[in-house]
Image 1 (cartoon, rainbow over the protein chains, first blue to last red):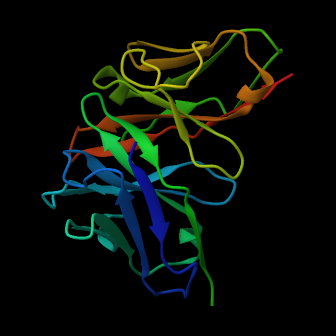
Image 2 (image 1 turned 60 degrees about the vertical axis):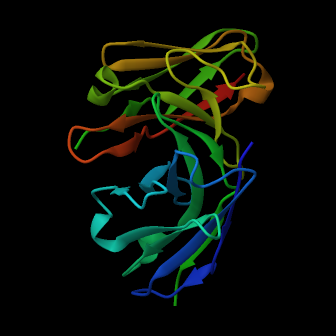
Image 3 (image 1 turned 90 degrees about the vertical axis):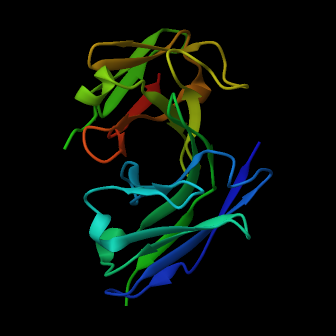
Length: 119
Length: 109
């Protein structure tokens, strides 16, 4: 079973850029799956941010697309999230997850990391 | 854009059967998956595809779909099933993206 682990700063200043990395272990990031970021504001539901394939192909949530960049580093078996121009509304637990295709479902999740946007 | 609609809260008596539903146009084209989330924990997959359970998920969990509605049924609910449940679905009406339902808080009485 693949394991995922998020890492990155827990505090980001307003108008800054949130940067997180997800390390993949127990399997290859080039295994033919989609690798996603999902977030959950405190007390609220899940929101999909975007995904990347090992080839570098990406898909993003239309509501966040202008601020999001997801990239992959196959040499390190990890993928990353950058979210720019953050506000307090971006405060959330951020999860990385692996999506199996056809049928589509998330079969592995990281433990999540809380990112707070505050000055 | 499309969305997935879930009832915010549902309750069930211990040992009884409960159905949690998820509605959305995307469900006409793609199967939904279902995730259980307990406080402070990451979501856990409980149902995927037509009606498949990952290893370790009790067989009291089952899934079904009809038209624009997907359902998660728990037959003989246990105290440990009390959690938030989320459906999701892939939408490819434009660029592909993933939708989540708003979540259903299940209380076992």
